[in-house]
Image 1: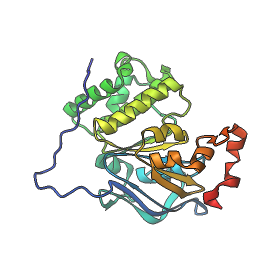
Image 2 (image 1 turned 90 degrees about the horizontal axis):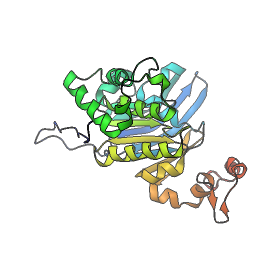
Image 3 (image 1 turned 30 degrees about the horizontal axis):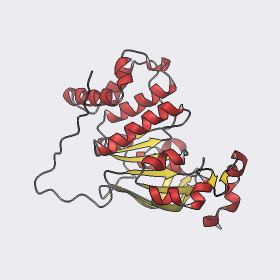
Image 4 (image 1 turned 90 degrees about the vertical axis):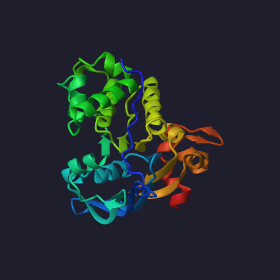
Length: 284
């Protein structure tokens, strides 16, 4: 079984142009569904290369919509970018097809995992590496198995019979087969047991620390996300209401109360947390 992670070799020329300040940028983005419903309003977000950026917010805040716009799949839900731009490596990409975005290195693991249930783990990984040569796919497969030994152990098992946690590992592994430059994860902890979440988040941190991969992390579990993120944005009703370093956000009293469920009086009840919108100081 593979025991080491192979980091991609740099193909940059000795006198290559310097990297852009931000790998990915949303600039004044407005997104509308069905020509009527404004889902995102004037949002600007920057994702620096080699870091983890967290998009936090309650259900329906617009987090997943931003990922769909970045991945070129808004059209499947009658959504359009009405104004603003999405840039990747200083080039506008919001009008590109999904397969072209993948070839450029933008890869998303959608909410709900969505593995191919009738295929084995190995076959799912092969599907993920369809843009690579056979040799490249073998290298990527070894990397995935080093990150997720459980997948190696069960590589001949049909994916539909795996647990939710194993399917999440497989979904991430399949995305890694493309050798992404930027990996977007949509609610990777959703519905998983705490021990599995620990493993998933350990791998996310390793992707940044050992493989120098850029990660855009969408989460409702703010505590988990802020524990490993470098920077974070909080979205509410389609706009950014707060941003800062993960350390700064975690120390913010409003974030502690409304997203972490903690105040100076102690941990708040779920009922209290659900009614936070009425009292948010930054929205007043």
